[in-house]
Amino acid sequence: MILAHKDDIPLNSTKGFELSSGKQIFVVHKDSGFYAYENRCPHLGIELNWLPDQFLDIENNLIQCATHGALFLPETGECIAGPCVGQPLTLTPITLTENGDITLTEEI
Ligand code: FES
Image (tube, rainbow, N blue to C red):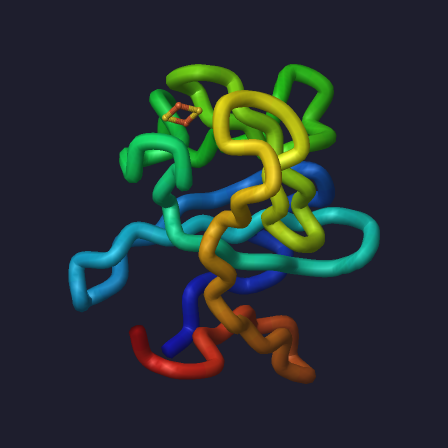
């Protein structure tokens, strides 16, 4: 399933998606590539964002939970600050195709 074209998610930005299964995910674009995670904070199991497509901290550096401010590494999803330190976001495998489409590697 195609989520977006890579040009739709500029460097250091994020975009949220609702899958046909009802699952909420988001994609983050960093220098090192594109990563996707379930939109679910490991602290309370709730959505990470308050505003659409905004999952990063004020510096557009780390993924941040809007509720209690937990910070996560974009490349691994590991929580490095806040109430769920050490607990990761759930990775969603994606593939970047030759023509620049970001696709789900497997249906979830
Ligand atoms: S719900 Fe995300 S840090 Fe508390």
